[in-house]
Length: 72
Image (cartoon, rainbow, N blue to C red; front, side, top):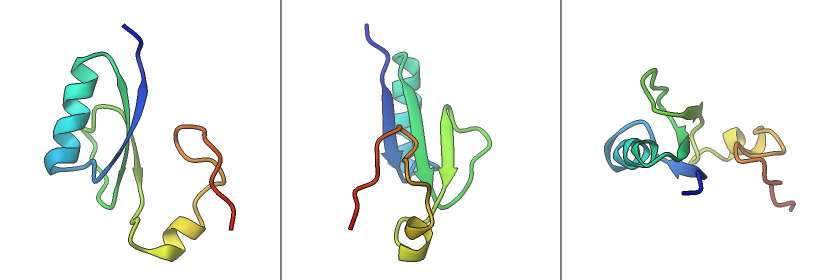
């Protein structure tokens, strides 16, 4: 099986966290985005509020998966 990096929004609770846990159990590597940091997230977690344009404007040019951000 191929192990994949999977980007999950809303990853610190509810469905997002359940998806991350399931994917980890299947050998994948979840990369989570969430407003609330979580020490027990089963992968790489980035704290960011995606509803705040200023927060996303100041994000790095590359997202956690290594893809380029689209330009204006």
